[in-house]
Length: 297
Image (tube, rainbow, N blue to C red; front, side, top):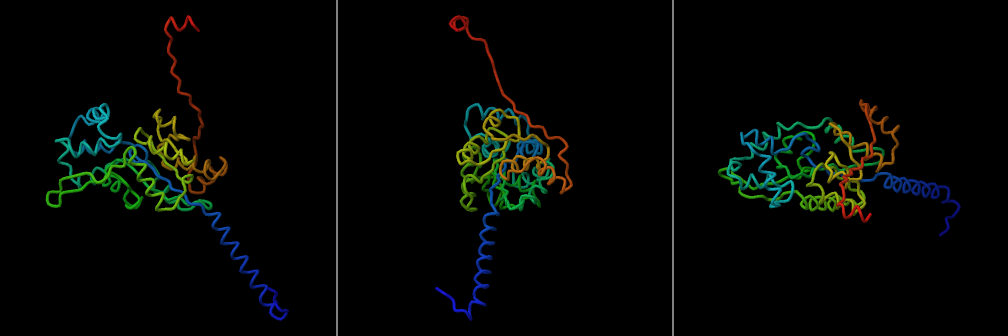
């Protein structure tokens, strides 16, 4: 449709402005990329196992032996042992919600989780939805991360309590093993994030299922420990007492930043990457063959 000369003076600039604004909107949509970053809690964001802290608080001994016994017989999903003990072990039947909250206050957290949570809200056109998915009791995690991570961003083991006695009657949910995959998929669907924009950080055997799941969707997995089962699966491994350390592989793998730019970001927020060593480790076990096999070699 043509525009008459008298109207062109007014109409054409308006049309050009509309195109410009539309282009800006599209450009903004392309720049802003949303990611789901999910992290385990025990020994990933903290230093100690929640079960050990709770046992010490209640004066219950032999926690590690009980966990090892459950692991040997594969009665529960790896990571869900504490929830099982709380529900079935006579000595743990005394646990109440206030004990879990107090245990959370005694958790020793890794440094700068608050700073990490703040930085993840916007990094050069990247926005990360930060959630915690753990088999640790939900009250423990919420208490430990109070004022740092919102309660509705924390998915832990959830119990049903007797309204009169406060006794734990049943387990509502245990995000351990494949249970973590279920929670991750629930969040991914709610946030409308594609599989390749999922990042998971974990430290132990209970994270194997979810890491393999994230791998299948071309997401990023980060190990926060030297656990052989995890390091062989995870795309990256970061060992540090500071929660900000996970930004290094995220910015490299997701944002494509080089070391100079990453160091500059840390320095702009008052931090220095004092030591940053990249080491490739091959875990090799060699044993002697039998004499017969050696002779045929």
